[in-house]
Amino acid sequence: MVRVALIGAGKMGISHLAILGAHPDVKVVGVADTSKIVTDVLEKYSSFECFSDYKKMLDKTNPEAVFVAAPTKYHGTIVKELLEKGIHVFVEKPFCLNVNEGAELVQLAKQKGIVNQVGYHNKFIGTFEEAKRIMNSGALGDIQHFVGEAYGPVVVRKKQETWRTKPEEGGGCLLDYASHVIDLVNYIVAPINKVHGALLKSIYSGNVEDAVYALVETSNKLSGVLSVNWSDETYRKMSTTVTVIGDKGKIIVDATEMKIYFKEDKCPAPYTKGWNVKHINDFAEEVAFYLRGEEYSAQIDYFIKAIEGKVPNNKNTFESAWMTDSVIEKIKNNKN
Image (cartoon, rainbow, N blue to C red; front, side, top):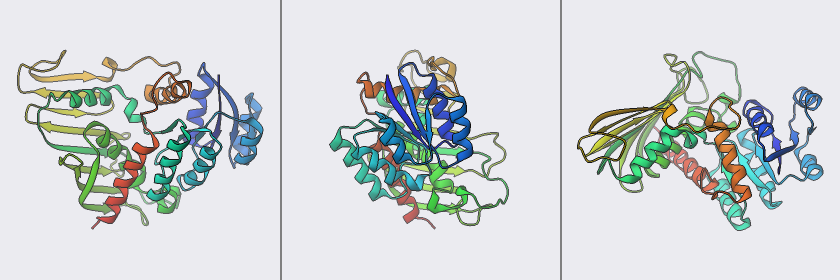
């Protein structure tokens, strides 16, 4: 059993806690949160101890791994302390607000040989993983262009200030929403290393952007466009799509469906010439505990297995998340 603790019992923290509590190879030993209401309720109905101070929790419970779901502005300080103690770390996205801080954590985790993962859950969705497999096979031929999109109804009217309206706390469409798309493009297509221009547009928010549009280029010279808007009320919930166009075919993939077109008869099984449509049920693997989607359990299971030495620590690492943070920084520096 892997002894696991949680820092931050907000929306994502509670989600992780529910999945961890049902995991057969995990023993939850402690939860730390600054809200006494939250910790009182958790302690009343759970077997683990709760703390208002995460440092005291670490000293008393001695966890092997910690899930960090605290506000992004605290990630750097907390994660560094955990790494220095030799504790395996899963931290929510985005990784860090400062790319230099993130680079330091990447190197520290490598030096210590510590299992590390960031919560970009889309990499554990079957349709995106299949798109990655197709891309790796070269079946689309020479890639001509790609588009990364995300739309949803997060901010659809002017609101009072929250963390979402404060850039210093990780608010804004770029950090909170576009980061998912950037991370997927880096994974499925190739790492983005240049931004040729960007538009950050406020629609309802005063201090942060509600939409992000950027012309980007990958490390292997592929051109692409990012289009992200979290003030689009025509969507019921967040929708993230990656489109890749090659001289032999085309992929349009989101979290529920993959449409793939091949121009020639020679294409990978089980696909045929012309349009093919696959749904998430064709790829989803059973998980021990379902909450919000298989991917949330799958990412946690992968992290635990990496600690146990059953899988390599090479998915959603600090380094891959730092690469996403680096693109975000480039977009900020090239905005109009």
